[in-house]
Length: 318
Image (cartoon, rainbow, N blue to C red; front, side, top):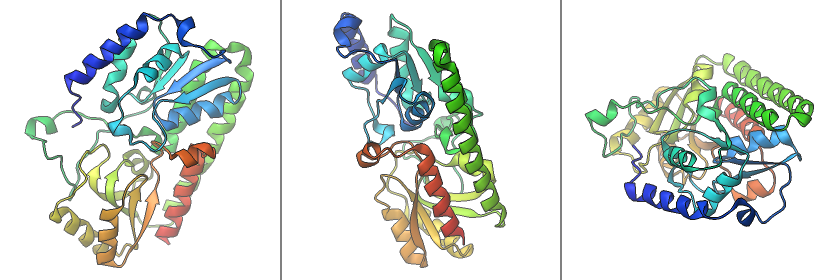
């Protein structure tokens, strides 16, 4: 679905050869403060921060406000990975470049591949959903796993525990602090998970309609929800067919739904169109893949975003 052209890999390899000629002392000009932890995306970044507090420096490669599926690593990003002690990444198809970088590094860092910490689901095409224009029968038989694993609060707890193991392995003197922070944070996530469970128990198998991509496969699996959407979670398509729009409009009417959802960084034109045709309202559910610069500067967390999703769904379903 997301085919990385060979020239990008050749560029990455050239950059690695260049940075390999520079000593770590020359690259790392700033005084090191504790562990250096780098994450490709926001969830890994925020989870690490919740664990280490002020005892480590945590950074994110994906710039705030940037769509993660179109991200390409810069030379500085590669340097940051090389200089890190712990590197956290998703591990899906959109991060195929990671393995090439890690394999080419002389100095090996501790890695946390978040997809290894959870049970994976394949990305699925359901009724009414727009398929990729360049898809064919052979491509449709390929197994592509949904990368948005953190939309499950249960998965988030497993990932946090895995990151803590990596941190403790390198900084055992602060183990008690990290373990305490991890335990407290996992309890918060578990309590919010139970709130979602109790919310959905009050309704007879709710259905969610997304006039957008759908990165919530793990979320709906947790709570056994039905859904319909314009595109799968990692789709590069932005223009749905008339039949897809008509299908979603019919579903909103058929199930008497009052809300059509869209995701962060979306122009929500599709959701608006469906809403205008059905009398429904629109609302955003945040997939937590990335946040805006404003949210980053104000310290918005994964937990806060999921808590806001809870409030949004509570209002939409009542």
